[in-house]
Length: 372
Image (cartoon, rainbow, N blue to C red; front, side, top):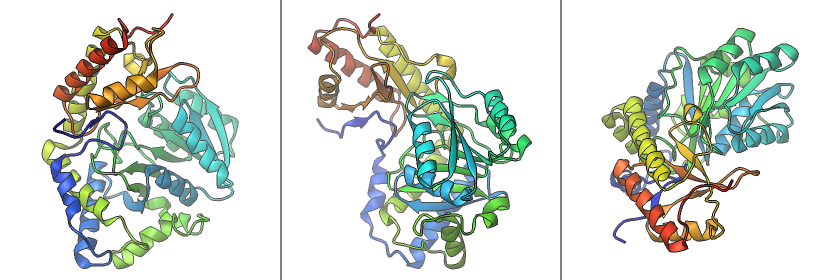
């Protein structure tokens, strides 16, 4: 094989050569040149959500989950009460980390194949005035369902509740505009739709609530208020930054802008999604979600109902053909997932479908159709 395997996952993703090459230089963590890279990157991230007037962006070392945990600890006081509408694995993770930090969390169960209802969120807020914040997973990556950010944000604003958005799999692909959608914090990461490499998260925090966050966090390393204040005074990260990840993300954002920004990125991902779903349908595969609730980020497919199907063998055979798939996250239904994001286009998606067809033939499975 003359290329690396294509990562059809929700992150890490396939990256461009330019992004990879950006990691070949070593940087001093307190050096003025690196501080300039960080500052420029923060400004361009704010531009993506049109947030320069209303928000600051605070980067943090680690995977995206580090930043979700940091956002909850920083934004929610220890006497706070968080509502977590739950339609998937990452909603459950948000609820768990909230509870582990001794914040009260109420989970609002929602079917895994349905988006969260803003009306149901509003009913919960009316029923329990002690709720101070809502955590919304914008794209629940466990299934690929898109949740209604603008509608939930409007409910939170109407009731004076804080909104923390996990936009890990949606930021830079799905439209998010801080001028029209009010959120107290929005969390994303380097290794998702910006097509950087993993290792850095970042949190947009509304300036109007930033000062109220001092002293909330019980963590030294993950206190976003302290990180923001320190960066404002010095231009530096408080603790050793992931310098190569920052440089790679800066280069990836430059390519994002060159491509045409969020609308162009969404258009490419939509093309990838359509190519994938249409091709897999011809092989008999059925998506778990209805098209109207599916985000063009990652698609959950029902596993073939044929007795010869085994995910580990299916995965290994697809990998041998140059494509890395993703296991399912559902507990009641056997599934697997295929990502539509990364530095790939419709041509790679067509090749992936051809590889899956070849794998089915090798395994003696005549169709990808699920069992009855």
